[in-house]
Amino acid sequence: MDIGQFINQYYIEPILQHEGYNAVNTVTYALIAIAAVYIAYRAFQYYRIRVDRGFVLDTIPFVLLGSTVRVVTDSIDTGVMTALTPLHALIINSHVYDYGFFTSSPGIYIITAALFFVSLALSRALKVERLAAFIGLALWIPHLFVLLFMFKYLEFAIPVLVLALIPFYLAYRYFSGGAKKHGIDPKILAGVVGAHALDGAATFFIIDYFGKLTGRSYFEQHVIPGFIGSAFGTFFPFYVLKIGIAFGASYFIASEKDAGEGEKYFIALLLIIIGLAPGLRDLLRMAVGA
Image 1: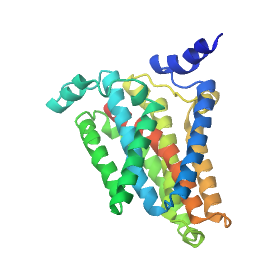
Image 2: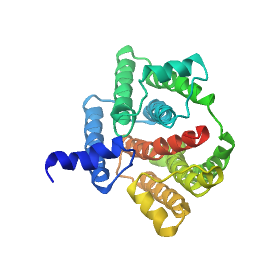
Image 3: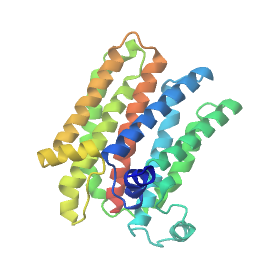
């Protein structure tokens, strides 16, 4: 197998054929993500960008944006989106959101990150606090509005949200006792747990129950969760494992005395993104039936 065949088999075809992830591209994307995270953190230090609670709040709207845009693409790709309104017709006919590299993983993350950094630079240039967050919300809300017209299975979101909110609440109660003493807002630590609980709950409920109740076919695209689900015959252990790992990571962040505030918030933010991005996408995709 030459290099061209290798790239086509493990990177190009999985995107074109909607096959999800494999061991090769999973490792590759993970290494690229680690390198990108390192470069970003060094850039923040170089340009003296403070990573704190406000920075996390600036970032979250762009995570919501990326996941929501991904579902807009899913709804077009599966034929769920129709010309319900002139806006939906415009979106379909524009082909901007058609399935492709920049509207699926990993391209959507590149676009979203670029929008965030541009917004952050604009916020610093104009010296307007939380401007990046407002820009992110201004981009996200219209996309969510598009999906609101398409919600057909909204009631199924309730058990997923309950399974996510309970760990979030318990984590907040636990960390609010002393996390502030160690330089990080307990709500952020609880957000780490809640984000991963959402991801685990969405995967568990959609594959174990929603797909069977509605007759729709869903499968886990990621390698490790797919292995866990196959090994146990259910994705509930994946949900429990996600909560356990997220809580352990949050506890480590809160109790680490040698790390600075910026490092703690940066790690917590990364963990929130890793859980919230796929969790929200799965939740919204289920709600529209894509």
